[in-house]
Image (cartoon, rainbow, N blue to C red; front, side, top):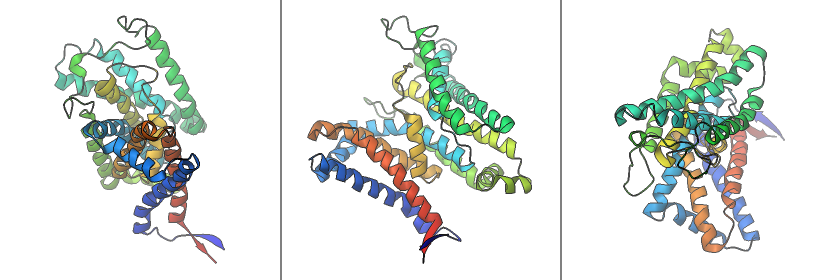
Length: 349
């Protein structure tokens, strides 16, 4: 028996692979829950109730999914062109702190219709800069961006920590390490009253649709796909490889920075070093579960958010540690990689 590369990937198999991966991950997680002595079906029922069983649960799941859509898109856009952006977490934090820096005073006198898009743009530009640095090292010196983007995550968090302990520290926070808050006119409107769900969700979904159209219908989209499939062939065919990768990095880093901006403007209002529970890293899983498809990112982000939000309710209901959500999401990535392998290869005798 051997593996043979498929001449073409069946559409049905490509669509089914994320579903199969999630089912397999849930089955393996179920075995772990059973080993812990808890009823598996009851555990998953509690996750469903905890994430969708009430207005509060549903809005919290959507709120948690919002930054995951942005970071998932950031990873999907980059990976599609073989720009291995593992630094969305750092770009998230730099976008967030840029919004805090400019949102406290610089936009205080502007109407909300101007202040909000301006701060979103500032956050996106900040994220772009963070990714352009390692991409420049790759293009100039051949430095592996997997290493540089990953290490920049820690640099970014330490830089943010320095700022919120120093020049951007809120004097009214009673010594608590947090940044100055953004002005009231820069807070994102709520989609549902008396909830944390904000208009950032609609922005994220709209951007996912736009990214899909750009990738499917524009020259840049075709160039980025070609760069990802075979860089040498793309360059031989006349694709401006360096400029294409720079555009991809701007889009990817901008989306990750925008995630940080939206989280500050929509949920917290200020920056702390625990602003992200790993949105940047989870975005990689979201992108892989979506098979790097922008529309699929929305569904994958919703699943990931539901697991994290619902696991808290499950933990309180039946006493299983909420870390089972981390295990399930991680297993989803592994099973998805296996599923992707079998969409590209088949077993022959």
